Length: 417
Image 1 (spheres, rainbow, N blue to C red):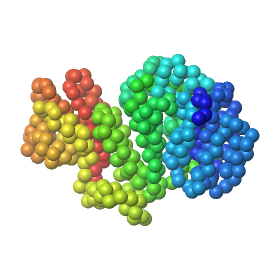
Image 2 (cartoon, rainbow, N blue to C red):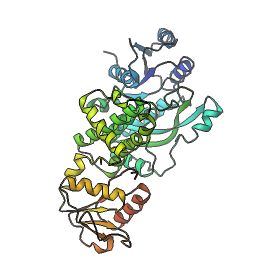
Image 3 (cartoon, helix red, strand yellow):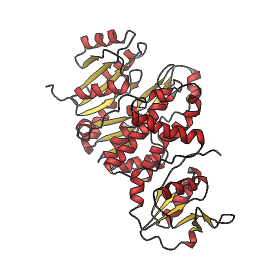
Image 4 (cartoon, rainbow, N blue to C red):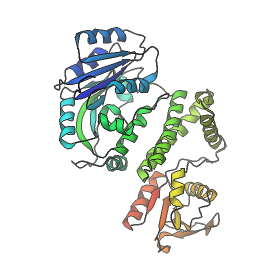
């Protein structure tokens, strides 16, 4: 068994011969020397395997795993994590770089504060002016208000979401390895966008987390990378699977809050966005592997093609609402009506549909009375389901918070027709 090093750096490698040496050199140049670099060659068809062997031969801190067939990034990362001997884990892509002091700074901070994870920021380099113009909105660093303190992971996640600054980039995260192993946090294999799931689960389970506004990571934008490639059926399938895996995780771990619901809804938004672009050119069902996956895809396809909305009201939310004596829906628009139908189908009958101003509103919607918020004076043992587009939901939630009224944000989606 290898002695434990301070940091394991895991790098999946595929088709990056032009950039690989710079990446490896940036890690070997770290001011923290007690590290290991685990490179997983994902059956790269170019000269990457030879470059890796060259580095491993002359540098004992470099370990190379050669996979016999291309198995995608999640598989490669997981294989590297399995053999990692470091106390902490850093995940880097093979075309990117890090600043020389990155690992030393992060290691010292993690040790001082006994952290499960650190989130930090990045800077960007572009291979062309065209790429720079096209990807100018990449969120390299956060501009929100964050306290210089140790957070519970879920509280840091909430802060990111509330300030619209949650990003899933694992290259901007530094993890304690025994925490990941204890909680069984790995990358889901077999689909794209696995980065969406790994940090989502990890941060929600972390007991001690920090964010620091340091731009240690150097993102490279180049042609034909994952970041710049166009949308394809595999992307749709990836978002679909991330959506299902997030819901399953939240229900298994009994984690529920408006912010987690919002992030799950982002995955659904992406499916809705890309579905019309792809359905005319491809048989998307071919992407799905099991009968269960195919059935769930058929539900989604039916909802989109018929414009009859299949509301993804999670089992957890339904069970939560059933614990309250009274349930209200805030929002009488199309989204509110969709949520009302979904609740009624689960035998949850709201006391009222609440609106800010009921001028021009009907007296009832599906038999449920419509009331202004000022007309309801008893919210004891009640839960309000905010059912409106984000534009209005933020204002509604602020109003409810000011009145100390319990509520949950049921993020919904644009409905045509």
